[in-house]
Image 1 (tube, rainbow, N blue to C red):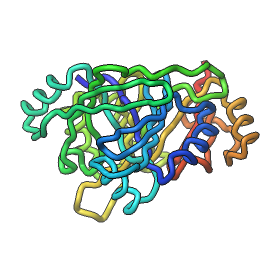
Image 2 (image 1 turned 135 degrees about the vertical axis):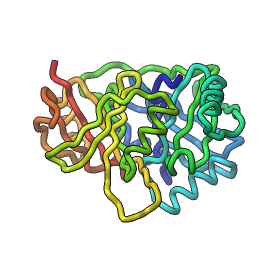
Image 3 (image 1 turned 45 degrees about the vertical axis):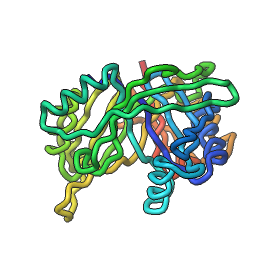
Image 4 (image 1 turned 45 degrees about the horizontal axis):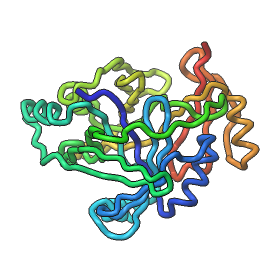
Amino acid sequence: MLSTIDHLIITVDDLSSAVEDYTKVLGFPPTWRGEHPEKGTENALFPFQNTYLELMAAKGNGLYADIVKTNLENKGEGLFGMVLGTEDLEAFKNNLTENDVETGEILEGKGFESNLNLTRTWKNLFLDPSITRDLFVFPIEHTSGGKLPSVKEDASHVNRLDAAVINTNDPDGFISLYRDKFGIRLALDKFIEQWKTRILFFRINKTTIEVINKESQEEKTQDSLWGLSWAVDDIKAAHERLVSQGVEVTNVKDGIKPKTLVCSIKSHTRGVPTLLIQHIK
């Protein structure tokens, strides 16, 4: 029913400066600078092979603006939401109802890109935080303009999302929601001795949702979006590109997963822990 991680949302105070930062991090500028006039926000979209990244800032007043402002006041800039794609939102809604998950009404949305004179439309279904375990996660179905303008390929640029990382203090409850109700495949449930913790790996559209069990004294279930892992074809070239643009980045080293090279980006990410990874063929 769900087919992709449609996009990830990072909320920022100032969109223009955040775009400058992420253009350096990713290696290319956004292909969409748009607005949600009725909702009170503006955004910039960066496309990849398997998803896109949305930088979002408040602009005026509206439902989205209120959500963004509240999040920035409470948590500051950072990773805010994960949006899951479906080709049939009505069927997904019905499936949730059959699994005793209460939902609201399907809403229609619209975004404009004035420079390109383009419009995108979609339908989404916001879920109560009590259902999503306080994560801002919701399904979306694009109805027009879903595919963003592409970018020129470059081995030093980020080309796909490797993994989105989530922390939880209730891995079994996470499985109950994401596997049993959302229908996302649980590829691996394993205790990692090196980290002394349990990790879940969900797979959707050849992309990983990595869930790390973080013990907590809180009785309340706590899930939180933590960080992102981005794939590149040539990590050494990416490292050189980042250093040349003044981005703080660690040295390239072997990854925990066999046949991978990794490095961590330490600046320009707006508070999002960020890893680059190259899978060696």
